[in-house]
Length: 338
Image 1 (cartoon, rainbow, N blue to C red):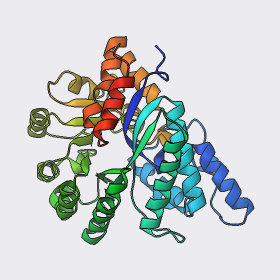
Image 2 (image 1 turned 135 degrees about the vertical axis):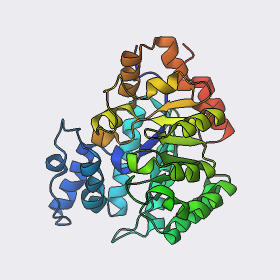
Image 3 (image 1 turned 180 degrees about the horizontal axis):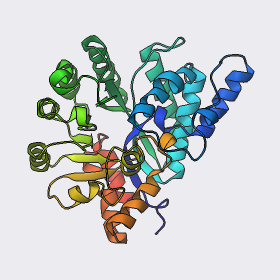
Image 4 (image 1 turned 30 degrees about the vertical axis):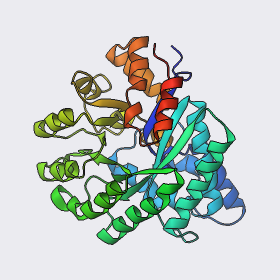
């Protein structure tokens, strides 16, 4: 089966984690030649073929390196455009890219988001076989005021049609237990304005406490990312609500977030549960090196999916996308049935 040609939906891809090492190197080279950076070459920080970044080494890649490279409008535009083109080349028909609004020495948080949106708009206008949308993320390390500003920005930008949702992301060891209720007003504002809500859910042991899971489910998310450390009560509630699960095979295996390798991934458990929908995702393809086509190939290989099952899986998340009704109808018209 040609997994690249298969039309696919990507709902859990972080912008800065989706930029290829080659693109980061090109940006670095340009800045290095112009005397604009003292950073190490990305191909030395993330050598080709190295994908075993665990939770301890993963987050510092962004806070101490990638964020310090993508600081101006030109570099953010180049990175965003390259990532979008890579998804399109991999056969992704519909993409909800997510990013945390962040201020740089040259851009305010809102200016950063508007640069990303301009790149998305230009990409959408340049071709007709991939549609890209944007989710704004609230980081677990944010304070209440910053979270509120992200939600407010998402609400203000929603009428443009490209910003479709909000997300909770970040280091799962930050604000453990019920501390995440600090963000409840921000998510309530976003949901009340019609934006979709998705959250990183039980991603790590520290973020799998019953108190936290109740808070997150109380935000009425339509989708959950990772779902690794949830308890039995949460599993029953997920099934009852029929939520969509954004499952990231290679990320979880290569970062040692799960045990048992690909065959032991909880994708197998959720495939056997009535109610929830599954959306395979890459999370951070620039870091973990497995494009969405490879994720489908791995699922087929380790969980014995035939062509019909693969096509059905690819279509499963259509109604869980945060895009317009017209986007959903378009996806139904182009995605393979067998």
